[in-house]
Length: 384
Image 1 (cartoon, rainbow, N blue to C red):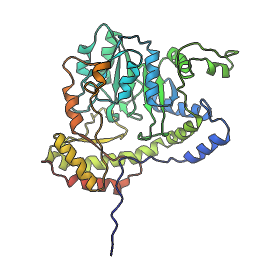
Image 2: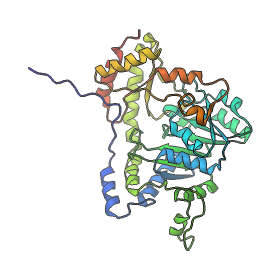
Image 3: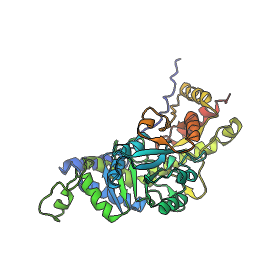
Image 4: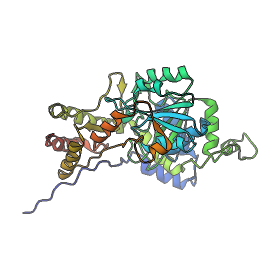
């Protein structure tokens, strides 16, 4: 008698929310499939409710939201922007495209967020802004970072691609900075395939952001009847997503609490089910300070070294579990020294954790049985 092996546990699988297909159909039927339609407005309101932001402008990606933030800062060639080296390339690209110099600051060994203790030493007379990335949705040390940026008159930007729904001392991530960016890529907790948003906490900047997003025109004001024609009034680009994508995102945002419950259950199953294995094998689990709430965006483990990391991923694959490493340091990547530089002291922690980190599958549909299968596979590996 033949037997069939169970299907592999994928690293990610997108969640189809309640009303998602109905909203997509409605967006197509209503004939308003271009940007800034009724679903765009609804999704923006929902984002403001979740984050406490003054204004939420949907964009075609988090990358484009970051590019908009760079334009809004009026960066000039040679200006410097501090950011972690342990982040996705979009964080640096957005500012390098304006001629600014990314200055890469090392991360903390516990939360893997930018090390707030190293920021002030990296500030020069050319520094214009500090960009923080809430890794895995665990908030950075925002009180300390905010104090530094205020003291030096610097703009604070939050790359909140991981952090929608996360809290720092009871306050939503995305509400601390002058601006914040969100991602709705297919790998995120709520998604529309490709998409993002710029959260703006300054009314004057919000008005200009609307123009930049509409190719540098005051087209939105024209459609509101505020001007009799729209014209080219600023630089900009086509950063506005289709209302069809906004319809999909609206359904996802309306299901946010349900999605979060499912993801949090998986995260807890991992954290509890692997605690003794991790301690016995010298593997670090995610660190979440007691004054933070995270959105269960990802679950990572830090193996003792690169050799064990590679062997661990191969072991999981042999047991039908897809796992992945994560960011490679930006400061030492091929483009890093061409467009930016490391802060004083370099980024030794970033280099270390980048070689050791593994992300386990985490998505809303994984369920208790799927999480248990992953836990069993992980526990079958012995660090050597």
